[in-house]
Image (cartoon, rainbow, N blue to C red; front, side, top):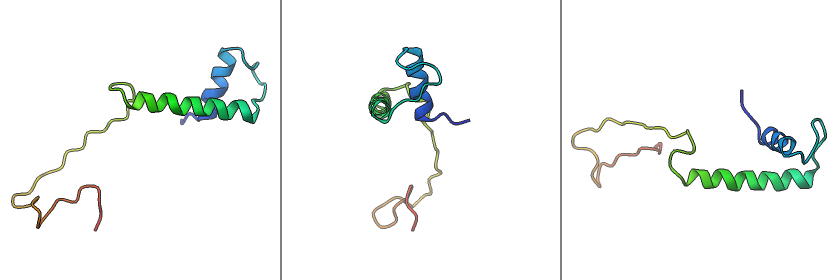
Length: 78
């Protein structure tokens, strides 16, 4: 189940008693909170061990490949 930014914002406002449970959040407050949430997660992405979405991918190497005339193209399709 995916969590939306609005669900995080709504729960945060309810915990902080900014808005009562079930009360709708106006656009001004939700946009401000979304900006804060984006800045916070961007800051976490700069620190190690804070965002658990790091993937380790291992690629097999082939002898004779990888030079300027025969480069690897990891991440690009040709």
